[in-house]
Length: 343
Ligand SMILES: NC(=O)c1ccc[n+]([C@@H]2O[C@H](COP(=O)([O-])OP(=O)(O)OC[C@H]3O[C@@H](n4cnc5c(N)ncnc54)[C@H](OP(=O)(O)O)[C@@H]3O)[C@@H](O)[C@H]2O)c1
Image (cartoon, rainbow, N blue to C red):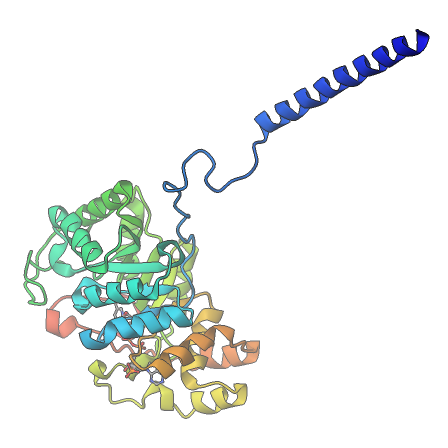
């Protein structure tokens, strides 16, 4: 009898203990449900977050012929490029989009920059311009959208040069609307001088996050680069191989054959292209070299892994030629780059 009573008591204690334990587990589960990427939504709604930072090395797409563009872009992405620099005026955005699609890369793993051309500065034309770019690229959003030049052409004139006097701040307001609408994640500028960036910064509700400009060992613009970085703008170096772009028709020795840079590259066991790209990345500048040759596309990508000594970086720093190659001042008949080197 005594035995059966103590068994009942033991079972009662055990059951109460079990219930308490279950209640605690249930409570904890309520507070800390298991982590799940689809928590709170079904898996079809889940979209991975886009890239937060600009990958330090991207593929330039200016002057890649339409027939080669999709192959080059697909190849670059397959080899590891995660950043594509495009623009409506390059005329190959459809083919860039095809290359992106063919690569099969998830959209969230890729950084794509686009640019507002000069003839669409009028505020009502800004949204249609980005919609055209998005449709051609086959994307739902751009990571970065830049005002290509601080110069307005008359609406719809394309490459023809009829200077218009649209206020850049009105254009900027329209750019800000694109961010609010989710069509572009970040906005920025290209080819501005310091006063023009300051004007945007003074009035911006959404600040520019990047400035794309010409810079390479022959046109270092160190003070201007540092100033942009200090304002919180990432600097993206276009024409990072200097005068290698044949359109520049420069009389100077091609940067890749430069007699000072060549032995420095050889000493480091790299090519001059890799040396130049790496030098820019060492000072925190993003580079976007263009090539339509697979071996060069791959060679340029390897510049990410080049480590230069402080002495070599200083030696290149001291080699600035202040030589600017992209300068449409005469063709467009406008003032550009006021106060900057190489004008
Ligand atoms: N925001 C702007 O206003 C602006 C202005 C200019 C450029 N950009 C952007 O910046 C990108 C790069 O600038 P960029 O095209 O002027 O010049 P770049 O990338 O400095 O140089 C391109 C030239 O160098 C050659 N090249 C590339 N890699 C090479 C290598 N490893 N060895 C030997 N030659 C090599 C290319 O020839 P192959 O193609 O024949 O290999 C091409 O002729 C453009 O494509 C564009 O996306 C923006």
